[in-house]
Image (tube, rainbow, N blue to C red; front, side, top):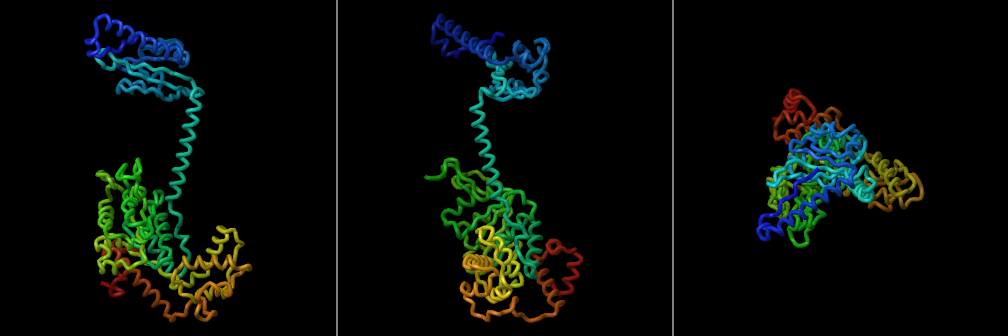
Length: 485
């Protein structure tokens, strides 16, 4: 097959004498013919198609390679009839070459190159393809390196995805006390809604664990869970941490840029821990990102749209911060759509024994120490302490006792040297409380739950009923029973 040589540029032909121009064209034509002959002779097979992607020519080697009886079987037929997954039509339609590609045909792999053919006016008249190698043995070093890099990238993506999944479920929040069961029931309901949640409670009560559990129990469970502790990041870095940095945004910025937490959490949940410590200059930008679900990275004027569900947590009194002018009221109302109070440990001391057993088991697994039991008298001693550090402090105390003690079970003596106990060491397991009629206590708990649901939904009864897990008719009845407007 003879290919038309590419014409020389007009300015080149005009600048040279007719004799020199003819010589140049002859050399150019010879070079094109030599290159074609070289590729044709060194390849496993060659094929050419016309402007309709019908086979116009096929080498004998390709005829044999494709298992045809003769070239006549292929000539004039659409290329896909002979090679079903061929990309020659793509070359004709786009005019763009594919210099190196892999093609699978009848359980064989071919390394191929495809080049468009053009006339003197530059219009595409067809395409020619060469099956350079049958199999990948000639490219083994390159393929091996590519496979290794691809495997490393896939592993890194899996590890990153695993790191950004929820680490805890509701079963990880230990306890069967009335406050604990009420908390988990409310949190499970809130997990199914896509509104912002504000977790309120003292430090160490398990707000982050609860945020993980709510993500795991939501429709976003298979998407990323990204947490950021606002108290642990310098104010000057928080904006970049939230919204990311465009490539070369400032001196020292990464050349490829960096995604922020909003982008990383796209489709999933963004957990804002210690949101009460957010600097005031960043609060308007966070409010806009929450309301519009869009932001601009630092150094960029490109708006990025995201779909993020926000769970915030704080151990501070946000309402008081608003009154003091330290926290924006509009941001507070945006975050405080579904407030959930996480009770301190001293309000659910009946969970103490189960928590101690679970934590001691986890400590033994992590440290390699022998499994420790705990005596009831030791639990009674722990119940007499007010736990300002809550669950986090309890875990620390148990770990110290397990490491310092040489026997099991742990007794009150093991904890006396750790805790600043100033009360009777034989205090009962559950702190003394006034005894109430069970029906009155149940009614009060029900009334408080309804009040919280109505507050969370702005007085809207249908969402409140959904949050409580009851029908709207039942909610109306209970509102009338309790005299709640």
